[in-house]
Length: 336
Image (cartoon, rainbow, N blue to C red):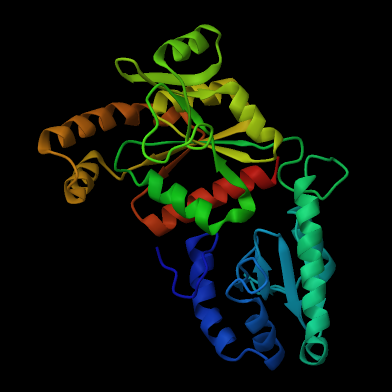
C-alpha cells in the first residue's frame, strides 16, 4: 500500500492528484505552517494530526481524524477538482460529517503560538465531550446518531480481506470502527480475557444460548467447538456509538445482512480468479498442498454467495481495493 507522503486517500485518482501536489506544498510551506506543524506532529498534543489529508473532496492543512478537527492557516481548503468553492459551503459540507473547523492567520501562529495551541487543545477536549454524547439528536451531527451501524465483511481465504480491514481500522479512526466480540466454546489462550477477545462459555452453555435464539449467526467448526455472534453484544456496542465490524464466513454474512437489512452494509472481497487465489495461497507457504486444494475448492463454493452481498470488491490491486472499501464504508456511515 503506497504511503510515501504519510496519508491515504479516498480513491486512486485523488491519490495521484495528491502525490503531484503534496511534495511541492510541503517543501514550500509557509513559516507559520511549518511552525504549527512542529507543534502538532508526532502526537505532541496527545493525538495524531495529518497534513493535507483529504476529507471528502477537500484537502485541509491539518486534520485530527480521531477528534474530527480541521485546522487551516491563512487560507481555505485545497479542492481536488481545483474549483473555487465558497468557504461557507465547504464548512457546511464538512460540519455535516461532524468536523470542527479552526482558522488562524499567519500572524496569530507566528506571534501567539501558545494561544493558538490552547485553542486547539480546548477544541480537542470539547470534541471529547461531543463524542461521548453522540447519541443525542441535538448534539454534534456525527455518524452514529441513533446508534452505530453494521459492516459485514466476507471473503474466501487468501482474498486479502484481513489486510484491507486492518488498514481501514488503522488509517481511519474517524470511522469509529470496532469488531464485534464473538462468543466461543473453546478455552482462553495465553492472555485472552473474557469479554475482551471473546466471551468464553462451555459447549453446553453455547447450546443453551442457541436454543434461546441469542445468536445472529454461529458455527460449529469442530465437534463442541462453537463460534457465534451474540445479538445482545452487538446492540451493546451500537448503543456506545460504535460502528460494528463483522469478519465472518459467507453464510454468517448473509444471515446478519438478512437480520439487519438496510442497517447493515455487506461487502464481499473477491480474488481476481480462483487460479490467482491458489497462487496467493501457495506463495503464503503456510499450508500443505492438500490443505491449499481444500481452501481453493471451498473458495469456489463461497464465490457463489457474492451476489447476495451489497457490494463486491475485486482485490486485483490492493491499493485500489482499500480505497474502494473506504469509500463504501465512509459513504455508508456518514450518510445514514
